[in-house]
Image 1 (cartoon, helix red, strand yellow):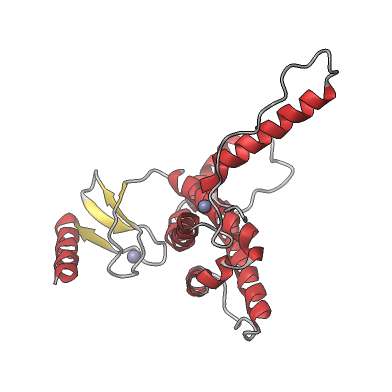
Image 2: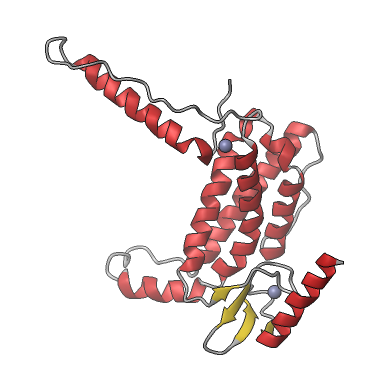
Length: 237
Ligand SMILES: [Zn+2]
Ligand SMILES: [Zn+2]
């Protein structure tokens, strides 16, 4: 049976690790000294179908889409981030000049990683080479949606273990970076201009603003409420 490599089996993996460590320690003690032989943990792992279970495949799909939603929020952190690094790390990093924008570096690394995955999958499947695209926010959106369109097939491939785990790790990483900035309350409805989940309610100014650096749509809370009402009505009809 192949076991799902996703977060659903974390407890099972930890239990197995603890057991192996205990068993190794037990085998290294002399028969006079040692107590009972450790018992393997009684946890049944979730099987992969064939690589990931359905729940973890869904988590990876949501995480991949979330990378595109989180990227503009992380990009918007550039300034605050830079100021803090200048204040606290001045002495320690005086030898190496800090990057002008750590957030941009992180997003560039993410883009590079996802592009490599797209290129590998194209080659494995005999699709043509990746078209030349300029880097930046639209390019990230394109590579995320390309991978999303092929995700079912990618995740059915035994070679997708590292990729799936990386996507989940990248999501956590971007969530942490996006949280590092002072933030209003995230809104669940996508921005009417750029269609990403980047709207934030700025409580002190009582307006709703798109955090995406390349969009920046601002609206009153009444306007936002009207969009919600309109969406609800369309979904119901
Ligand atoms: Zn799973
Ligand atoms: Zn927007």
